[in-house]
Image 1 (cartoon, rainbow, N blue to C red):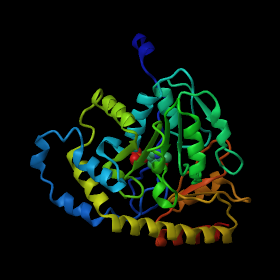
Image 2: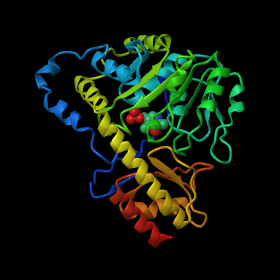
Image 3: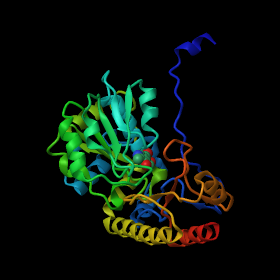
Length: 349
Ligand SMILES: *Cc1c(COP(=O)(O)O)cnc(C)c1O
């Protein structure tokens, strides 16, 4: 059809499966295996459908001020959106506006090239080394922006803050986005660098460590100019991205810090236990600072193990891509789920 010539076509991102069945062990999308903080249920009970008549606060003040207090920032340095995917997509649109390519690792969150394609942003993938680590000197080429997750996904590898600082400091002409979706599971946030570098944008999410993937809350922190530009772009597309429920439940989650610390510590403990089991079974994996582990086995095919696990009702993630097709990314679930997985692997190996 003639009109198709003028369509902005794109190959979409493929998210991990969300099976309808409940009787499976779901370790494929890095959700938290524990419920959100008790304060979230309480805040939910206090909501009234009557309030839905009115638009939500376009400035998202309740949630922004909660996050600002939590991280010790002024509100002008915090931006919230509908999951970090929304925040990241808007950040691509806002900050990656050069003819020079943006840079990101060759093995990384597979949404980055989708957004780049959608917005017609040129990009260049920078190979990780043999240990799945970033080679910081490779980020000194001319570019229109840089983005990487830290810890990286799907590898779980955390880059020390001096690597982050090197890349941010040497690229003062570009915005550098650090996607910290998994920062609460052992890494150190680059937030401490935000006061020193006005080109650093940090993006985090409620979807993993705060057990609220279904509520869709993400946020960015950085220099107040960066936040203002993001906010201008938001008010140029949709002033009311965050609904009333997300705004109040998000704030309730941030206030319940004890629960947050307890659940993230539990996941870190389970990860340590699971690592020992993986060692015993002969699996190889880079040290993970995320709520998942990226595993391979010298004698097993990644694709075959993936299928065998699926047939047993254990869902993990596998990519048919160069360099990583022998690997599986396994989310850290409850102790019970990880014991069931380990029992299966024991028999399979
Ligand atoms: C999960 C994830 C996100 C997106 O999470 P939201 O649910 O949209 O907040 C962003 N970046 C990485 C690296 C992720 O793994």
